[in-house]
Image 1: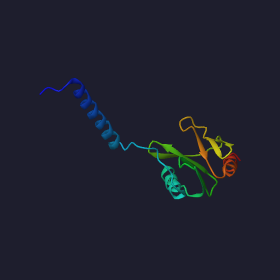
Image 2: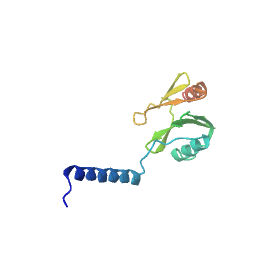
Image 3: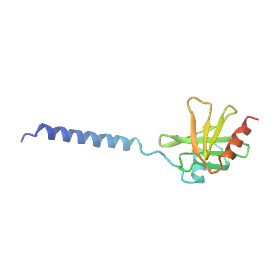
Length: 134
């Protein structure tokens, strides 16, 4: 029995799609991660920076990132990186700019870049980030 060329092409394409889906599953690729609550943000912060114990957490409303402050006044920025969260302790060169409920945080690191977070109290986080400079 001879298969028509269109059916052969369709079956080949279908097999390729299943192969790509299998590779994506094997590589654990998927949707962007979310921080569902403050405990999840604290856990991600501890994974990003060993020993970081947050006393204040500013969680993005969509769970795409967070700002955390420890007892020493250090501020850690978490943002999605693949299927995990990457974190950076902000330096005195970091900048924060408020636009309504949105806070744009520039880490001053080219490789990490900036993050846009929608927070409940962005002014408090601008003050915390400005305090790093002193």
